[in-house]
Structure formats: C-alpha cells, structure tokens
Picture 1 (cartoon, rainbow, N blue to C red):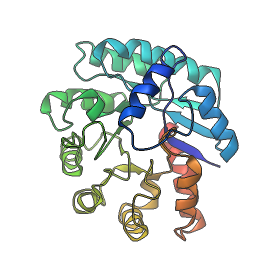
Picture 2 (cartoon, rainbow, N blue to C red):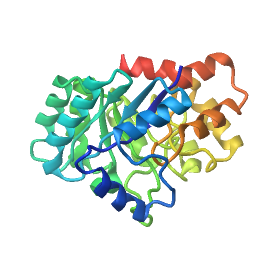
Picture 3 (cartoon, rainbow, N blue to C red):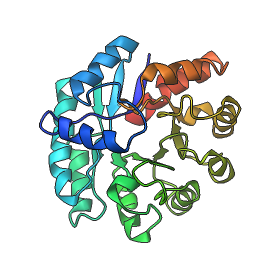
Length: 263
C-alpha cells in the first residue's frame, strides 16, 4: 500500500493560472497539469492508494474558499484526503482552524515562503497551540524554496524552537526536515517527536545522508511523499526501496505512519 502524504492540486477555476505562475519559479517540470484528475491519473499509473492534498492559502481572504474546496474533493473521492490551510495573518485564523476541524479535514498546511511569514515569529504561536488543541497535525514547507531563495522562512533550528515550546503539536516537516538544509536537520532535529516527509528529495539528497536521517529519526516518523506535480511518486518509491530497509520499516514509511496520523 502507498499513501503519498504530500501532493498538490488546484480547482478547475484557477488551475491554469496557478500552474503558469508556479512554473515560472520552479526548476522542475510538472508531471501533471495540477488538476485533481491529473493527480488521480498519476496515482493510477503508480498504484498509489491514497494521496494527501495540501492546499495553500497565500492570502487571508482565500482560506475559506480553499478549505471548502478541500472538503469537497475529499468527500468526492475516497482516494483523496485533504488538509486545510489558513493564512497566519488572517484575523479569523483561529476561528477558521475550528472550521477546518468541523469540515473533517485532516490537518493544516503552511508554506512560510509563499505565505511570507517566519515560522518562529512568536505572534504565530497561538495558531500552533490551537492546532495542537484541536488535534490537527501541521505540515510545514521546510528549508529552501525557489520562490524565496535568499530568505528561508523555516529553518531546522526554528522548528526545534517550536517543538521545545509546544511539544504537544504534531508537526510534519516537508523535504526531510528542510530542503537542502539536511546538515542542519541532523544537528537540530534528529530524535525529536517530529515527522519528516520525503517530498521531492529523490535525486537531491545523498543516499548516505538519507539513511542517517531515517536511522536518527526512526522509520516510524518518516512519511512517503512526492510533492506531485513537482515530482513523479515513482522516484520517491524507488529511492526508499533502494535503501535496503527492513520490510517493517518500508511499511511504516509507505503507509502505516500515514494511517496513524490520518486516523
């Protein structure tokens, strides 16, 4: 079984505009057109059982519409699970978290580079605490992103500080804890009760370092993920299978850890 814990799709109304804008900054060619149908097509090709869609509210005015759409696609297809999103500057952010929970969405996605906030800014800590109170896992983009190459808004040491202060928050850090910041991940994050996902790291991270990260963090806190449409899930599947992990560790990474988080 495969549960891809990190994918993206857009509503039919905005998909062409959104993908055209993202392609301008991405060094990677997308493998789908960014639609839900495109995602399902690549899922079928790779025998992915469930994909977790992670919408991103890039403006405070967007989060209600985005969360309604996320709930709609989740209800329409049992192979799609959705997180919600809020913009941390929204005056109704805490209320929207309660609505995310009521809609049956499975967590909250933050992309601090797209949303232009620093994760360790203490004014956002009440949002993190509310997520913990509502038992909503939080997934952060972590490390480098081409939209903000000189100004990384979420570094491994920043997430360590959040974990120190709010240990009850279920936190998932994309891109194995911090894209291209894996040395800092090894220094600041290993052994903490934090999940890492494997989104779009195939071909980017060295095999020896990837093994160290998995061994140091434990295979029970690693989530198979692709970042589709920015990578084909088969690349992360083959990367994980090529590590020589035990069958139990592979099962944990490919689906058991995700099942536990998604209940």
